[in-house]
Length: 120
Image (cartoon, rainbow, N blue to C red):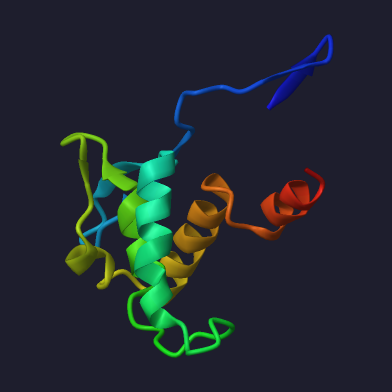
């Protein structure tokens, strides 16, 4: 978001972060983390509602909580296809955690995005 002469401008291109994953055999796998568009984000958020308890304040189900977000954002660069959840589930926990953090920031789900939204 940029402001020029009192006008707020938004870049409508989806942001991307290049990522190289090292396969178990040591070969590189070039991927990209791609920001979700608005509809995909809303669909993702709606799918996560089932993981909340009755008061919608705490998680009752942690299965695929990180995988589901990563799967919306991680694309195989050579195939131009999303990486499947079944493959992401096999990533080491540390790699999954770091990818999840990047996806949270990329899609505006981090605390900084919440603070910006409160000011509007």
